[in-house]
Image (cartoon, rainbow, N blue to C red):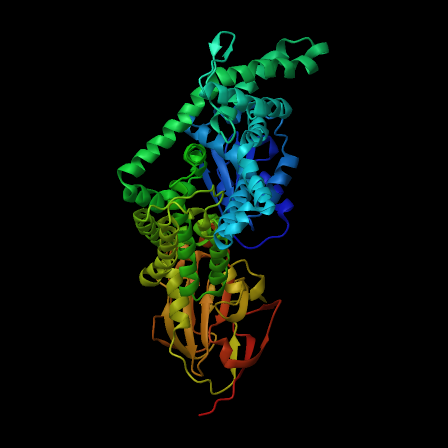
Length: 631
C-alpha cells in the first residue's frame, strides 16, 4: 500500500523479514525509486507481504531481482538494508541468477543508479547555462559562465571514476584499486598520448600499437576494466604471500589492468558502445517518426520491468561522439505523458484519497520520476497508462518533425530538462520539444477525461451509485440502529483508506460477532452490489446509508453472501437484509470489519457516535440532527 510513512528504518526491517531474513539476501542495490534485492529463493508469500507494507508502492520481479518500488525515499530504506545485510561477504549466488541479458541490465542498474542524481544535477546546470547565454549574450565570456560550465561538465569528464566506485561494489573488488586504474584512463597524460596518435604518431606498448581512444566520459571501458579486475585481484591475492599482499596486490593490478585496457579492453568496448549508438542513430536517420513512436510509446513499458538502465551507455556514447542525442528527447515525451495521465486521473476522480495520491504522483512525474504515477495510479487502473503511452507516442512523432535533439545529458528526463533541446544551430529543436511536451501532457489528460480511468467496476458501482442517489431534504432527526451485532469502532481506525479518510462519508465500523445484517431504520433498498457484499439504503427521512460487509470482499464475487431483499424493496427497522458466511470470508484472508457510512453526512449539523462498545443489533449507535431546511 502506498500510504505515507516516516519510519523508513522500520520499513527496511519489515522488508528484510518479509523476504526471508538477511541470510536470504545475496545482493542489494537501488535506483531512483526501487530497492533491488537478489534473493537465494523467493518465499511464496513475499510479494503479498511486501506489497502490503505501508510505504511500498508495489513489487516487481524481473531480471533475477526482487524489486520493491518505494519512491523517492528509497535511499533511506536502502541505507538501513545495507547496514543490516552484510553484502561485502555475500556469496556470488546473485551473479548466477537469470539470463546474460538480465545480469547485464542488473549490472547497469547497480552501477548507474547511485550517482544518477549527480548527472541529473549537472544536466540541469547545463540547461540553465543555455538559458542564461540566450538571455544575456555577453554572459558566455564571463568568469561565472566559465566556472559553472566546467562544473557542469566535470561529472561527465570523470564519469569513469564514478563507475569505478559503484562497479567495484557490485563486482566485489577493492574500490581504491578500481579508482586508481580508472584515474589512469582519464589522466591528461593519456589524453596527450591519444592526441599524438590521432595526429599520426605511433606509440607502442610492448610492441603493440596503441589506439587513439580517449576514456573521459566513457562507460563500457571502465565497466569492463572493473569487471575483469575483480577476477585479477582475487587471483593475485590468492597467490601472493601474506607479508607482501597489501603492497603488491594494488601494484600488480594496476600494472596489469591499465595497459590491458588501453591495448584491448578499451578499444573493443568503446567500439561496442559506438556500434550500439550508431545502430539506433541509423533507425532515427531512416525514419525519425518511427523511432519517436517506439520510444515515446513504449519507453514506460520498459520502465515497468526495470530494464531502462540498459540504454545508458548508448545515450552517453551519443553525447560523447556527437554532442547530442534524440533518444532522451523522445524519452521525455513518454515521461511527461505518464505524468499527464495521472494528472488526468486527479482531475476526474472524486475520491479524495485517490485524488491526493494522483496529485503527488503527478508532481513527481513532472520532475522525471514516473514510478509513483505508474504503479500508484496508472497501472492500477490500466486505462491511464494506455492513455499515457498513446499520448507519448503521438508527442514524440510530432517532435521528430522538428528534428528535436537534446544537447546536454538529462539524468531524469522531464519538463525541467526540455531546455537541453536548445541549440542555436538547430532552432526548431526546442520548438518541437515544447510542442511535443504540450501534446504529451495535455493529450494524456484529455484522453483520460474521454475514456475514464477504469476503476474496479464493482467498487465503482458501490461508490458512485450510493453517492449519486437523488438528494432529498432532511426533515427530521434520525436514529441509526446497529445493523450487525458486534463491537462498534471508529471509522478512522480501519485499514481501508477509502473509508477511514472519510472520503465515502462519515459513520462507524463494526467488528461483527454475528453473521446477519438487519435494516437500521425504516426505508428503501436503493442499491445491492452484484458481489452481494454491500447494500445501500435510504431512510424515510432522507438518510443515505452504505453497509459494506468486510474489507476487499468484492473479490469473493458473491460467494458466502446470501441477500434476503431486493432493490426498491421497502424495509422496516430490524428486517433481515443479508447473511454472510464468516468462515468462508476468513478462509480467504479478508477482514470482517464492516463500515456503516452515511454518504450524505453533510446534510447534518451534528452527530453523536457510539464508539468502542459491544452492541447487539437494534441498539441505537448513531444519533443525527438534521440541518434546518428553508422550504
